[in-house]
Image 1 (spheres, rainbow, N blue to C red):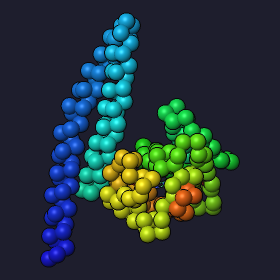
Image 2 (image 1 turned 45 degrees about the vertical axis):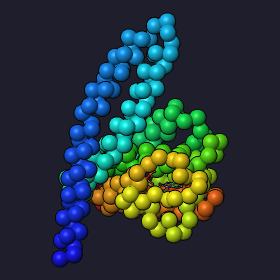
Image 3 (image 1 turned 60 degrees about the vertical axis):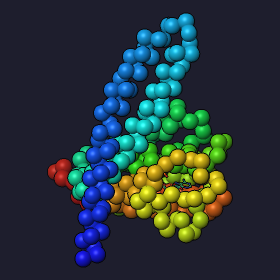
Image 4 (image 1 turned 90 degrees about the horizontal axis):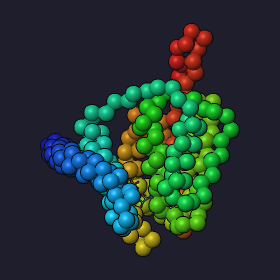
Length: 243
Ligand code: ADP
């Protein structure tokens, strides 16, 4: 009885989140297009303020689009509408390109530690979103000037990726909850940092759909390491994937 009521409430809430984010997406996409055309037209305008303002407006719209995409993904996961589209790809290449993009956006020192190329059979886009989320968090929750280290390792049966920052860290009690939906740590260091507490929740869902593991270790005031592991496969002589 109680469970039914709870499930109904969750479904209603999920429908609401799905509808709102879907409705917000359309006008934002149009707004983005308009701003991009305006930015282009104002490129050689004598008043540089106008072109600068368009660039800044586009950045803000992009941020909003990312948030809305997060909520849309949340609603898809909650309603069980997500399936994996697995392909073979090189994990090192994917992570290298994500780091290169992050370096362009944030002037921080990010070090990649890897040995051999590791090929996985997974949903590339979804693993990309996990990696982007963990790296964005490492940047978001550590002060400027602090290093970030990304480590890719392979064991006999899995690939393990660690993202280590030297940031604010997470206390023991919060660490148990950070993968929960809407959970955010409340502290003086993080209260000015925006977010909705859905990134880690979605990342955990994606990794679990791949039969993988995700976890975090942290010391308050010293930094955190977020890690995920994905099972590896082998290709036999006749080309069949073996797990
Ligand atoms: P968001 O960052 O949007 O709040 P997430 O689900 O990605 O949502 O993270 C949940 C919470 O976990 C964050 O609000 C933050 O308090 C904490 N957190 C995540 N990553 C880190 C990190 N690398 N260092 C410190 N705290 C973190």
